[in-house]
Image (cartoon, rainbow, N blue to C red; front, side, top):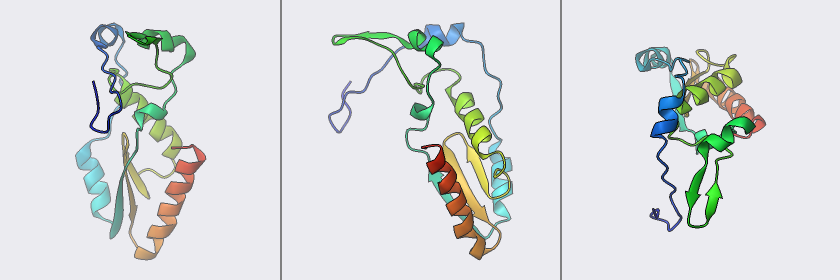
Length: 140
């Protein structure tokens, strides 16, 4: 399939792989809790992660499970494709691991969406810098 910008969009049917994969029960946050946690703050910045899922590397032993064939050859994903059953839970678990000390205090994270928040206006730039430094550190 072709994207609007002319690049190729790869569409792969992972239904069989998803059926064979055990469900990762890592919980996603409840939206109402995120809203409640943010509502008590005077300033906040909303950010969406760019190609978030594609920044999680596939385990070497799992790459072959994502193999697909095209007219140009046989390929497999080196990074996590969006359509895998556990992509959301895997990404959320990575974000919790990276931001565990900041979550519920100065940031909220829902998969690849983040909210930097501050109770006092002067703290907001400090919180944003801390978030951006962490994102940069882990090349996100």
